Structure formats: C-alpha cells, structure tokens
Image (cartoon, rainbow, N blue to C red; front, side, top):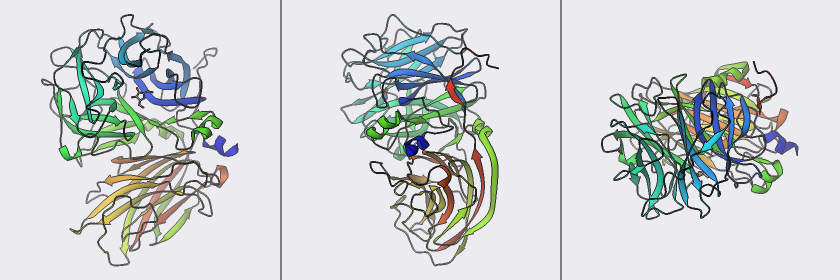
Length: 537
Ligand code: DQQ
C-alpha cells in the first residue's frame, strides 16, 4: 500500500515496527543520548509493554538496541511502564519505573545498568528488593505511576514525585524522599494538586533559568530560578504545564498564575502529543524535551502498516523571559544538519482571500521558517467574537487567518493549514491564536481530523513568525519562537510523494499580508539497528 508506505517518517524517531508510546528515562552518558520508550514487541497496538532502547550521538540519527527491560517479575509482569533516569554525582545511574504487578497494582521499581563502563548501557538489572514504593494508604492501586527524575534537596536527601489522583478528580503529585533509592518516605502534603484535572500521568518537574539563557540540572536550586510542573492528563490525553515557584523546605510548588494552573492553562503542545519528558543534557547545558505522537488513523490501519507512533524531534526548553508566562520550545540545533537546498522568498504579498503556490518542488520533508506582517488594511475592522481557532482556516475574520498550507496537492483537494488568527477584541487590541487545521488533511476514512491551537503572545515589536517541520505524516509547528507548539498527524491520499506541495494563504477578509520565508528540503536521518558487527567510526 503506497499510501501507508509514504506515511512512515524519514527523520523522526520510530521503531522498525510495532507499537511505541511514552519516552522513558532519557539521559546522556559517555557520548551517547539514550532514549528508552514504551514498546510492544509483538503488535502495532498497545500491550506487553517493554522498554525499547535506542542511542544517538546527535539526537537525530539513531541506533536501535536490544530491549532494555521486559516484564518478567511479579512486580512488573503486566508491563514495565514509564519511568525516569537520575544521574548521581558519583557517576551511578538510577532508573525508576512503574511496574504493573501480577495483581495490576502500580508500584515503583528500581533498575540500574549492569556495567557502567559500557557507554551503550545495554544490560539493565532490576533491584532484587523491588518494588521500592507501593501505593500509600488512600491511593488507588491502579492510579499511581510514572516516577520523575530525582532532585536533591538542601537537606542532602533526594526527592521524587509520582502522579496520582484524590477522590477520582483531583490531579496531584506525591513527593517521596530517599537517600539510597531503595527506601522511601512519603512526605506530608503534596507537591501540588488541582481539582478537576483527574489522574496525572508522566509528571515532569524541573527548574528553568529566569534569564532564559541555559538549561539547568534538575537539582538546581536558588535565586534566578523558577520551576515548571508538567502533568499528562489521563482524562483528556493532553500535556499541560505551568510555571511557578518551588519551596524546597516545604516541598510545595505554587503556580505564578493560579488561573493558568497545571491542567487548566497552558499546554505543552496543542496538537497530537502526550506523555512528554525532559532531561538535562550536561554536554550542552540544555534541557531537552521528548514527546510521544500517537497516530490518528484507525487501529486496523496501524495493524496493516505494522507500526504506530513516533517521537517528536527533541526540543530544547527555555523560560521565555520576554513574556514571563511561557516556555520556549525549539527543535534541537542538530536537526539543522539535515537541511539540504534552501529556497528563499522575500516580501511575498498575499492578498486578502488568496492562495500563493511556493515553487519548491517536492514538499514531503521540509524545514520552513516563515515571517508574516500585516501589510495593509483593505477593509475596516470589525470586532471579532474571540473564539480561539474557530472552525478552522475557512473561518474568516478581519485580520486572519494567514499562514502556510502544507502537504497539499495542486488542486488543494487535501491540505493542512498552519496559521495565525489575530482577533479584534472589545478593547481594540489583537488577541492572536496559532492553529493547525486537519479537517481537510486527508480524504481517507477513519482518520481523526481536528482543529488544534492555542493563544500566542505577540509583543508590540514582534511579527508573526513560525517554524514548521514537515516529515511525511507529521507536522510540528512552532509559533512565536516556540511559545505555542502544535503537532499534527496527516494521512493524505493524494498529496503524497511528488504530488505534495506547499502554499501560502491569507483568508483574512480585511488585510493583505507580506510573507518572507526560508525553506529547506530535509534529508532523511539514519535510524537503524546498531551495527554490532561493524567498526563504527
Ligand atoms: N503510559 C504508560 C504509563 C503512563 C501512560 C503505560 C501514559 O506508565 O501513565 O504504557 O501514556
């Protein structure tokens, strides 16, 4: 099936076959980036969860390694679920993960590399005293999972957080203290809790530098630092974060803005994205974010394809010190090594209600940088009812939407608009949304197609800028330098291979816009089994 074959990505990480979900235990060790992931070795749908393992020297080209952990003990026989790595100051590596036991109880387990002198960390040992943490009194057996990377408190002992819920609706993270990673004490109170957000999966908790310059080690404490709390909401399958302050004495975190608390405010990614996790890359002083991108086609299609899910291009994460309210996510610089020939377009005027083709040849693997300026007001503006991304790119207002059409065919029978939608508010200012509209992305049946997006701050001296990575069936869109990010899955039936095109569009009723773009064709990445038999370098 040529259509299914086309959907496989060329520079995003995905296993050779079968099902993948959450990224697990990312870390950098002796020159290698390690990515573990939830993996079903037997099928393209979720089940039999093991830890897949891959390594890379640049976060782009990957080698598949043998499975790191399989469910083979009473305390993880129903699955080796999500977990996180901690590098100890003495050089040891601690891996904590959730096991679903023979009774389907969620417990936290300890594992470590058998041989620290092996840079590939091929062999993992499970601690004989597992489980190291069981659900505390009052916590449901099946709602207690995904331990974080540990951070060191000022008292010299380590802390981890584990997500759960109270009374089925209050999402929360419990904090445990340990000195040896085998014995844990539950601390009083919780790190934070938000009513109405339900079960918190894959909690991530990390410091960011307020000056926005570098990534920080998970243990960094002190002035000039804020803390990000991220939870993956099981009820809605959305990753939410909030920025706030961590009190290292009471082990409580408080959001800067309670109205934008975890789960009711900002999303890490407004598209098809879940179970994300960061780690500190000590080799480049940066914090890197991985996220799982599920399919939006049917299970039957996934079984026929023989694979399901990809990981995003790893993103660096910084605090946005210009807004003070957002994180900035940006594809790691290494992805730029895949850039081939570039095409530039300068000051292209896109009139109200028009589409302009961009002659770049095949548009299946792209890195697009685009900047838009509102050029002229051709119609008097009316006040808009502010309603985020509206009904998609067909929903016109005075100032938008405008942007690019990716993975489109010549006749525009299939297209995915990535766009800005500035809306006139009652006080006369513009409120802008950054959106992706999948509704016309594919003629295939049994594909979920949605309009995704979120509000994006555009400051007075800024233009509307976006970066869009296109890789066959995935589109990662970064608005405003990464303030608002949207990952889309698209499964065209016509706009495939040489028929995939790129266009500019402006569906505003009242303004012309001017666009400047730089577009690179992207090379494919090498993602293949580790060549154990060959000499590598
Ligand atoms: N996936 C894992 C769980 C986690 C969920 C199981 C999130 O540990 O809560 O595969 O996608």
